[in-house]
Image 1 (cartoon, helix red, strand yellow):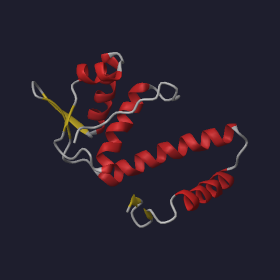
Image 2 (tube, one colour; image 1 turned 135 degrees about the vertical axis):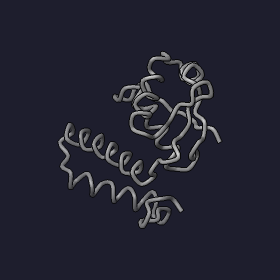
Image 3 (cartoon, helix red, strand yellow; image 1 turned 90 degrees about the horizontal axis):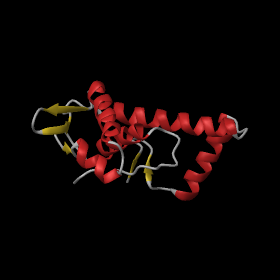
Length: 137
């Protein structure tokens, strides 16, 4: 199953970071496994309507992190050594940082934010999350 990239131009994060997060998300949720191919830089840039240098920057960073690898003449692939738990932690940490920055800007304390997240979780997802793994059931 190919990775579906969702890029939000209104997001404060740079587009290359959004691309990186989409690749991480695909690994964590299982839509991209070891040795799964990624779109070429040109193809993804055309699909997302962004500069190819932006996609190249995302791929370069992901390769530096060991999440992907390039086979010259064949393409870019998800690395077999990718640690899903590590990627889950990376995603969670980035989300937490964004939430906390937004809360701080709005005068909300971390405890108030945690309480609000728990309340929404209880209302929106009463039994859909397996808290032992954090994955949807």
